[in-house]
Amino acid sequence: MVRFDNVGLRYGMGPEVLRDLTFSIEPRSFQFLTGPSGAGKTTLLRLVLLALKPTRGLITLFGEDVSQIGGDALTALRRRMGVVFQDFRLLDHLTTYENVALPLRVQGREEVSYRAEVVELLRWVGLGERMHVLPPVLSGGEKQRAAIARALIARPELLLADEPTGNVDPSLAKRLLRLFIELNRLGTSVIIATHDLALMDQVDARRLVLGEGRLHIYE
Ligand SMILES: Nc1ncnc2c1ncn2[C@@H]1O[C@H](COP(=O)(O)OP(=O)(O)OP(=O)(O)O)[C@@H](O)[C@H]1O
Image 1 (cartoon, rainbow, N blue to C red):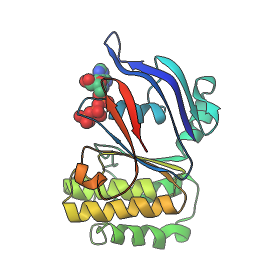
Image 2: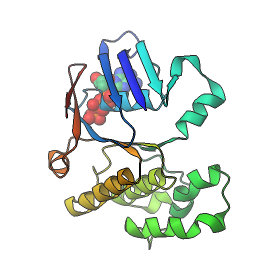
Image 3: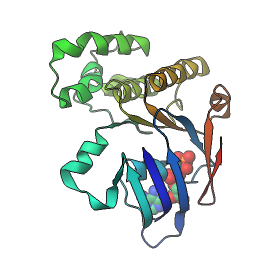
Image 4: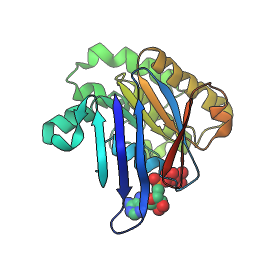
């Protein structure tokens, strides 16, 4: 569902941050993306999300060469992905509940059809008591859980998560990891970018390791 062929990326006139990446992400697969700080994990996720264009090489997403499509078709591809950003990107004027329900509202669904689902997921991530407050009053860990719930709610085909357990304690990190595994079991491909070795050790999953611009894959 994602294929990179000899992809390179540089920011402006800077050095190549990613060099000759060739790999693919299979449907229903689960993998970690890791490597030292500054290795390019966020950059790679932004390429998959179509938030950045490669400087060279070919990216194929859901079978489409992304350099050949634009506008509405790109928006349609993006909607098939769920994302947890490092900085959460919650909308401050919407409640926690409304933020999490947003992907379903965008799909044009009626609130009666999803209300119970959103409330159940919020309870699962421990935000049952916080669903009617605005994001500015949430703690860092609560924001992170709201961002995760928003990324999962529409059961995307591909989920990208950038350090999704960076702000929570180990027991909650374990619980959130179970949520990602459950989503994967239901058919979503999952890519989790993380530094957290203890988290990775909990699952026997493929590891994509970035270093010096190159990718090494451990199956
Ligand atoms: N917008 C940008 N403009 C210029 N350079 C950038 C930009 N974004 C990232 N970089 C550089 O690209 C390299 C890779 O950054 P990236 O954020 O992808 O790494 P990372 O592996 O996600 O790091 P971390 O684990 O610290 O989040 C770094 O050297 C960074 O300074």
